Amino acid sequence: MEPNNLIALFNATVAARPSKPSMQYLFNGSWNTLTWSEVKDRVMKIAGGLRQRGIQKGDRVAIISKTRHEWTLADLGIMAASGVTVPIYESNTSTQAAYILENSQAKIVIVENEGQLQKILPVKNSLPHLTHIVHIDNITSSPTDRLCSLDDVMNSDLTEVQFVYDEALASLNLDHDASFVYTSGTTGEPKGAILTHGNFVAEAKGALAICPIGEDFTGLLFLPLAHILGRVTQFFHIHVGHTQCYAESIDRLIDNIATVKPHFMVSVPRIFEKIHARTLQNVENSPPLKQHIFRWALKIGEQRSQRLLTKQPLPVCMKLKYFLAHHLVFKKLHDKMGGRIRFFISGGAPLSADLALFFHAFGFTILEGYGLTETTAGLSFNRSHFIKFGTVGQPIEDAVAVKIAGDGEICVRGKIVFKGYFNNPQATREAIDEEGWFHTGDIGEFDTDGFLKITDRKKDIIVTAGGKNIAPQSIENHMITDPFISQFIVHGDKRKFLSALVVLDRDQVLRFAKEHDIPFASYEELVTHHKLQEFIKNRIEQKNSDLASYETIKKFAILPNDFSIESGELTPTLKLKRKVIYQKYTSVLDGFYKE
Image (cartoon, rainbow, N blue to C red; front, side, top):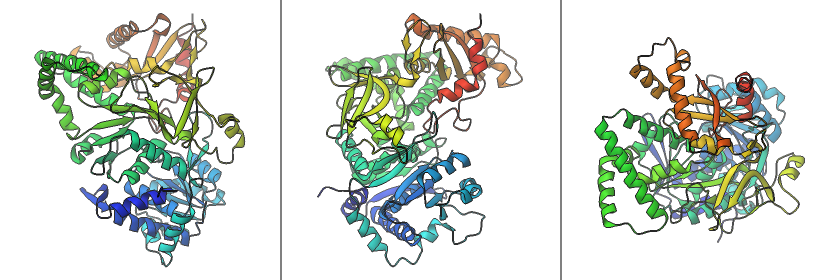
C-alpha cells in the first residue's frame, strides 16, 4: 500500500527495520545510536505532548535550532500530532524569527538553547498566537506553564499517545500541509512556501529512483534542516531506512567524515570548493617532485574520467596508470573522507564543471541536482550511470514536468511543486500561472539528451551598457577554481565593463607574504600591498584568457574579510546575497567606473 503521508512513510520503515540503527549523534564525546523503534517511541511521545499543549490538525509549530537529531524527532513529532512544521534558521535574528512566527501564526516554538530562547522572549508578547516555548538544551530561565523542555513534552501524562499517532497515520493525506518553509529572503521579506505531505513523499520516492542508496548505507547530515535540501535529505532517510549521522558542525565536518565513514553525503558546492582549495594548497607547499607526481596523476585521472563519462572503454595501460595514481595521490583524500564514499549529491547552488571533473578524477562521483524551496528541493538530477558536468541532469520522472519559456525561464509543474505562499495570494499568482506552471526565476536550456543546464538567476543576469547579457555565476565559478581566490562576486549591470570584489584564501596569502618577505601589521594592510595586488591581478588575467572579451574582469578590489552568514552577505547555504553586497560596497564599486 502506497503511503499517503510522511508519518505512513516513516511507519513503514519502522515496521521493516525496528531494531536497525536509524540515527547516530555525538554526545559527551561518543557516537550514540537510536534504532528505528526507539525513534518512533520518541516521536509518539513528542506528538502526545504537543497535543496536550493544544496542537490540533493544521496548527503550526516552529523549530529554531542547528541540525541535530532532536530536530528530526521534533519535526516528525509535529507531523505525528497532525501539525505543520515551520523551520527557522538558527542564524536568524530576533526580528527575522518574530516575522516568521507572526506570519505563520505558530502556536509553539521549539528553541535549541538559551541563545535562541533570548531571541524569542523579547518579542513573545507581540505574537498573539504563540502559547508555548519548548527548549531542547538546558537553560537558565525557570520553567513555567508556557516554557518547558523537550524532555518535559515527552514526559507529559500521555494517555492518548497511541491515539494521536494513529490519528495522524489514518487521517493525513497527500494534500494536507506538512511544512511552511520560508525562503531565505535574498530580496525582500521571506515568503512561506506551503509544502504538502504529497510534495515530500513524491520527492523522496523520486530521489530514491535516481540515487543508488541501500538500507545498509550510512549518510552524514550537516546541512541546515531549515533549508529545503537538508530537510529532504531527512525525509529521504526515513523512506530508505539507512543510518543517518548528524555532524557536529561545518567546522568539524571533515573530522566527522573520517570517523563516521559515510557511503554518501548531500552537500553544497562551497564544501567542495574548500576541499579543492586545501588540496591544491597542500600540493603547492610540497617539494617539486611531489608536485610533478600530483600533476601527472590528475592528468591521468581526468583522461580516465573523460572516457568513462563518454562511455568509452578504458585501455589496459590507462587502468594500470590510474591504479598507480590512486595509490600515490588520490588514496590520501579517500582516506580523509572515510574510505567508503560511493557518491556525493550537490545542490543549493551551481557546481563548477571543472570542480566536478577534479573530484571525478580523484574517484569521487558528484551527482549535481537542481531545485528550489518551491519544488521541494531537487527537480532534476544527474544519474550515477549518466552524468554531464556543467548540467543539473534530467528531471525526476513521474514527479515533475519542465519546460523552457520563450524568454528562457525554467517553468515547472507536478507532484513536487508547492501549493503557494501562505497568506500571500499576490506572490502566489506571480509565481504560479493559470496553467499551474511555477516560474522558477532561473534561466536554462535542455541539451539533446534532455539534460538541463542552468545559465543563471533571471534577476542576476547582468546587461552591460553595450547590451551584452552576462551570467555572473559562471564567471564566479571559473574564478574560484584558483586556489588563491576564496570568494568572488561580479558586478557591472548597465556599466561599460565588468568589475569584481575578491576574497582571498587567507592561508595562501600569508604563505605568499612569507615567501616574498612582505612586512605587515595586519591582514587588512597585507591585502593592499602592491606585490600581492599585482600577483592577484596576473592570476585574474590568466582566468580572463578563458573568457569572452565582454566577460573579462577589468577592475577588482580585494576585501580583507570573508563574506559570511553573520554579516548578512551569505544565505544559510552559503550563496551570495548580491543586493546586500552591492549596497555594502557601493562606494568601492562606483569607484571602478569613474573616469
